[in-house]
Length: 369
Image (cartoon, rainbow, N blue to C red; front, side, top):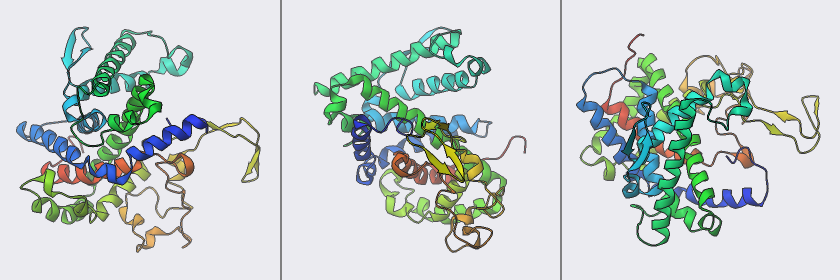
């Protein structure tokens, strides 16, 4: 959303509100939701015993539950909304399940070669799945609008102090524009969900391929998890997760090797510039190839390897092959500068709680190594 829009008064106003939403002190109030929803999903999977799962779908489930509670409050996240299923029947379900269903249809639509050839037809319901997607998005919007109306009338409250909807509605820009409020809530979900579920799934997969690295992660996180075993929601604190340094390195390395957005959205130059001896005129469209940048052999030692220690300032791999410091933008999964992803802090908060809980309670191995 904010990485592609124009720098204008609306941009700055929107970013100001979202900066408050993702301020660290606000995020501290939602860690209980992150832990509770993660533990609930883990318990459900443990009850099923050993079975084959799609690791990406697993993380979509976890993140959808967490985000729906963060967005509108835990109590409101359990509001039932009608949605259309694949067989055409209608069913009531909670927001997190509807988000999952919509996200799946959106990904299928984006990956449909038809729309790559005819992108001008994206706004139209060409296929039955398109009509279902549009119908379910409208149902979700109607449900969120009802929650907003009840919140504004004082008939309902969020379950925590500072859920995203409460923060949005404190600002006239959002309070007076329900459609913008819904737009930004949904964009935050779909953009953030892709980053977190993809990087989490990739981290699990890389660790399954490297047992020695996984053992080192478990040695780091297990003492804190065991210490909080009586009550994870209350006792697994942010201070405890501050020590999960190597776990963060593993997540960064997964982000480096497999960035959720391999290529950035197209941007344009607002004035003529010269970069690397190449002249770019006004309105020239450009994209950044994050995948190539983060595997540049000039910046990274053995760039194709999964080596989390390259993020350790004390490691020789923290430097370029020529021994000099890496370019600060050699690793940029969250973009940078004025357009740095506002969800970066939220993603980091979620990762240090969700990954340790999952890694210490569930064991993953490939069905077909």
